[in-house]
Length: 347
Ligand code: SF4
Image (cartoon, rainbow, N blue to C red):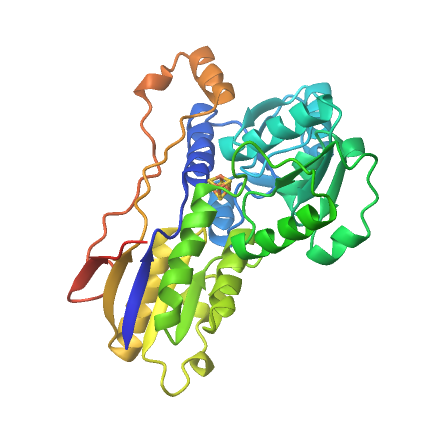
């Protein structure tokens, strides 16, 4: 068996920052209870590891004692949640990804200018709930191309569409086309809302999956961008399975003729889980491993202002703080292989 490791895969800059924030909060507020509103990122292992370190995850701020420290997850929150936290006197640290904040800013700006917003995304996803909350009376959520026909808008000349950051670029394209067909004057966002990490991970799968018999995506079921990676693979005709970790491997997936397997990971999936999966596949099938570099990524986000302020108040200089979540050093040994080739293919 031949394993191809897609690169980029796994942690994006927003997830790295959000995990780093909780790490640092545990350190800065040592001894105090730490709450996180919603899963910090949509990955079971990341959440369980923080739970093991004493973090309490909540879906309702009402259960957080007044005055406590609460971290807002990478997916962003609505102004209503921010207001509730303020009213309850909570000490808030905001780990919202800056690329989600950018979409919030667009929603605020267009709503103020009198636009109605067509927000393309999954209605129940935390990010969409947060973005919609910026201008609930001006926002219509569009989940599919079929939704577009039944939209009732106030003024087709004053419409803008925005998108969730983690959509499938394939699906979003179809929905946006349907919107443009029905409302030719609709305004596009000033820059692409689907983020660089989502786009790059999907593009890598789109490029490599056609030469594979199976695609394994490490990620949790509630991770939008992980699920989208399986869909992108299926769109190009290659079977894909989503798994939290190597323990979920199923022998039935490895049908006769499964020679080449692409391994990738959603933006919230830790690399140690990918490495453990590779080691398992090397053990079981004697797989060889090749990493395929498709897009280089060097995006990094700094710590949020709310955390820096908390550090300063406690006599800690934020400039002395290094980022705790670092990219793993890729080595054959880590992945259980005797040799690991790295090949680049221009996108
Ligand atoms: S997937 Fe994109 S929007 Fe979401 S946290 Fe990562 S970089 Fe930010």
